[in-house]
Image 1 (cartoon, rainbow, N blue to C red):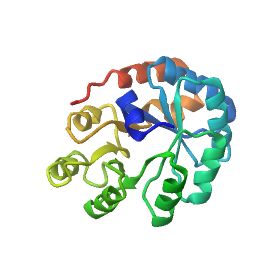
Image 2: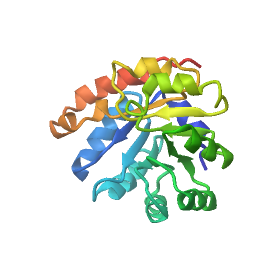
Image 3: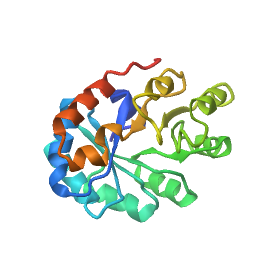
Image 4: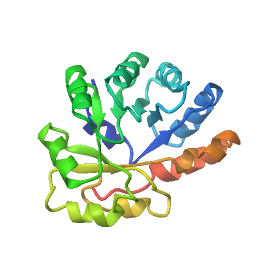
Length: 210
């Protein structure tokens, strides 16, 4: 079973994907993987999300496929049943932490404040999703947290763009970032797979501070 450390080491950027039409799933994933983004987070925001996870696990055995926007233990179990290799949540509850501990699946828990981050660290989660990154203080917030919370590394998500991505990745406490600019609704609805692959290639080539 994969660990979070294995997942965040794979790529500097994790695309945050919302699939509205199942027919878009394979060409979208093909563009991302060909572009070098092989960790795929599919948000559980649409009726076809779980089917999309099943499909990607079958068709892309070398990719790492996870479920995002997991809110509770029920969704966690649905994600596991669909074959998700990791889960991501926008925030964290005690019941979700207990459910994850029981199943052992790789988990990237969401946090926005020092208190939330410290509580997660007490449970052993030293890699966390900083969300919503831009609204919660962005690069300045993470820079301020680096010294007092030196053992925690972050995957900031929420409001990240090609213009600010490198600012986040330059921070020593940022392990990777999450973003949806390369899988925007406009690009997907327009079936602009070549453009998605180009943006994925640029994202995969972004340098990290470590």
